[in-house]
Length: 417
Image (cartoon, rainbow, N blue to C red; front, side, top):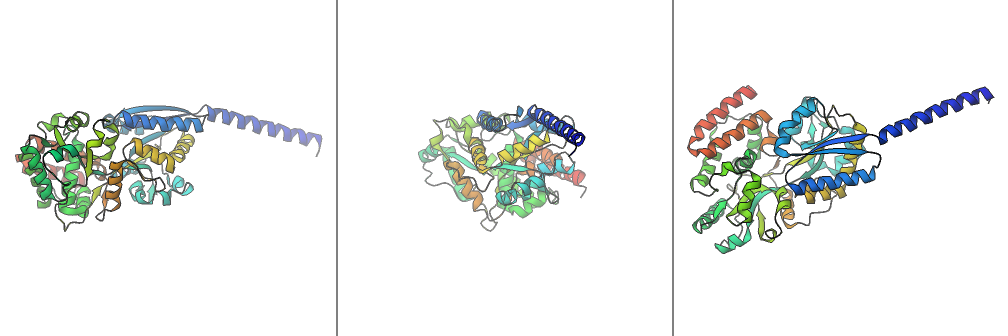
């Protein structure tokens, strides 16, 4: 090798080394920005814990996280995704994810699924994470919905067993009401809590196949099967089984009815367990929403939470690294415990929490399918109108026909069917 050639090669090597050092420096100086939606202090705390662990494992990456209350987050997300997007957002699978994937606002993560072995680890949530055969979500947790109840209040009024059928449930409500205890707390100011009631009554009366057609805009709201959901619901309202003025309470202000023993039950997702006061926790039980028609295959709501990389994200390299870090059995279990949920990672250990265990069994034994939830299975515009209709119905249950006629007009406008 001539001296001149050696000189050129050394110069090239030095240039490459300088470039690599400069790239490493810029990677170290990289800031990963993320916006995280949360409900309650315990949910915020577990996300912070996971982010701190990621920072320890990736000392060269700064993380700038904004925690936003879930209701405000829903409103602000479209604006972030279409303007100055963070590198990571948490959101929901199903129609909610597809809405943004379809508009090119979420990155395709199919490569991460192949590379990280998620196709097998997240087999049960792959369909909900996909749009047109590609995956746009990294699932984190999913959770069961069912009836929370106060064991001590049931005992007090002589309800021996958890109600399994609708007749047993109505009988339990009757006993509680007669003893001066409001049977059911509901947080109607948060319209999605009413959607839980609609989902379960529809799933139990009409089944998941019908429910999904309705969610897809293929069934008129004036269909007698939809009306039956509302008339069944109306019987509970007319009997005085829900707290008074339920539309004035959001979830945070409705839960104390349970904690203070003023109400005996609440239909809700298991994510609320993280906020139960220690003094009340031993008295809280949980059972599957009662069967109304035994001929209808039993379906459940089991919404999947997920992480996404917005298409307009700036630091995608660190964003992919964060997803790979979070999508492990250990972090899945940690998030599940802190979020009062079940890990979507099939290799995570089974939950230890008694209520999560029941939720796990309910979802594992479901033969009639798993729905994502009313406002996650449906386009946002129709879901918003549908939930507004539910609030109008709860305010005046005699207006069922008017509410359904209005929703049918809206369906025809949105779906043009």
